[in-house]
Image (cartoon, rainbow, N blue to C red; front, side, top):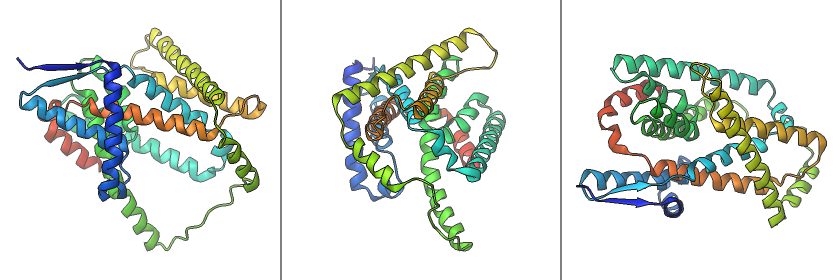
Length: 320
């Protein structure tokens, strides 16, 4: 007998935008959010999730959201991120980048071993251990929303909510531990902080930034055309891989889109066929991640975590 309010995709997008504005306001007012670098969409979206929980628990109303726009915004975010990543910039990372990459691989494996192992000991579905592992803690909200949805399709109820909740926890835990630990190590070992010689010509870089300051409709439409093609490519590639029916293999659409964007960017760097406006690309990326995360967070059904609260707290405590 619970009353229900259903918002269509336009109304849901409007709510997401209003929550973003609320997030900006709260971040400005609450020092804790600013000091520990909380993303604005996470702040506003979580406020919405808390209100939905209260409405549901006190039998006031259940709110159903149409998050049709969430997937396109997510694809756009990952695509724009890789359009901005040239191999020339990666080479500047050198040996340190390789060390960091290998460390992340090892950490991902360790997180999943811990998550699955503890899930079995605590008698919850092992897939939820993966959600409380590398999917959320290293993959972040993007991977959490994508893989959480896929795991739910396999019959594991609440997987998306668990993944997003763990990603939010990971964000907080990382900020609270990483910064102080880094500062401690720098002081303890008296590590000098100095910028490396990147080999980038300053005058050339400034000239490019001045060009990028000029934004018009044509450049915006060009970038949207490139991004859209990469998004379609990623979706088609994911569907093709799924059609192969390879056991235990799942390729998210955003991975294919990222791959296509990387190939396009680096071929274009060599040929110089198109000029990619870095500033405009950054704006599109910021809008995409803001809308995607806001929708993902506000659609969290916190009441699904009630029976899983204690096991998840134990798993995440060990992960930290």
